[in-house]
Length: 418
Image (cartoon, rainbow, N blue to C red; front, side, top):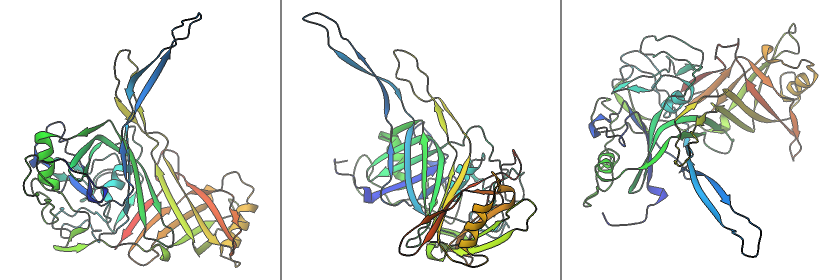
């Protein structure tokens, strides 16, 4: 294959349980275990090294003033990309709801990314899909046992589930081995389309070459090593068992009919809040439009790397840290018994150090009418809101979702509808 430039515009990204770099057969890739992520411009993937500098400084007229540098360790791979938040309509768990996925609920295009972020259950085992999303496009974060077409789930895991990310940068194919999803951040600025920024790590960044590259190109599309005509990407939204293929981002088999996922318009977003000034006071329901909205789920994953001398050390494993589910919202300052000014007044006058037991919130990204992506948090701690003095006076408040009881891991429930 002749050397040529590789363009960001032609980049494709795939997430899979199949490890091509370690020799997996191309036929192991199937739409149940290999999914495309349609990303926006500005993605990044890199692996840096830790170094140590040793200097010499002696006295005398001809001292040794040399310096040596050593590469001591490879840091974990850092990767991030942004994708549109798109409901699919595949929300049911009845066997007839999706002829290609045995009735598994997959209500948004990046359902597998959310599962990798929030669950200890891999989204596929072999060529069998394992969705932990529940009926009606729901994902309750609390620990639960398996049910009909819903796999068991726990968010209190010690180590995050590991996958393999493939970045096909035009004609160069990289694999991020043992990739973990560390963070998902939703940006719902009202002048745009809802997006999620995905961030994570991996143990190795490997360029696929020779037969391994050919195997990847046979599925993802492109020019084989020998050159010639371009191989057509082998996507399949009809049969989850098709060999040497992947599931496309935008098309889903709902009740035997292929349909496209929908965009979410942020301008329709709203928020429902309930807050009581004390543990005995009646809670007040607030519903008001927002001018800006963000949400962040962070696993705070850290990696262990040995420090052996005379070796280029590599990461040997990862651990999940404290789960942080936070965000912020901005709104115009409006008077009224259930509007933003009253909300600010109640928070400011609440003398408790923690009001989470009597506070909750439901972020409705896209509004209350489908398509939307709702985040319901039954116990939430609001910070003291601050004023934003502009042409129109506004307020901004940060929040942190919390467990209803210690160890339950039930800070939120996601609900997605098309």
